[in-house]
Image (tube, rainbow, N blue to C red; front, top):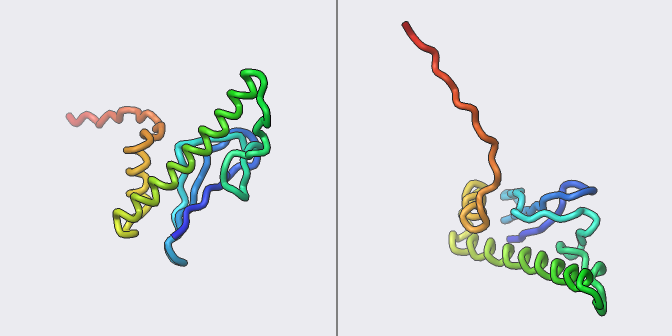
Length: 124
């Protein structure tokens, strides 16, 4: 079993996707509720690029940047741990719908398009 984070787009702000593999046959690809600028993503370590951290931040902007980097990396780590726990609790018997339900329950529902009401035809 493995969970790998990656980005689908190479530029601009993008959602962080993940691939869950359970053996060779089971392969599920979904998006996380988190987004990041593609230029700030470290694909090797699957996290916010640590090289963007300021070594000795002296002003508030640099301190805030470091907190933001730590916060995003912590959220990704917690997401991975909670998803692993969910998979183990279900004895690896999950599909993409169960994972989507888990994400919606624990991290909020993804935005959906508003549906237009359909008028039924009037029969005379």
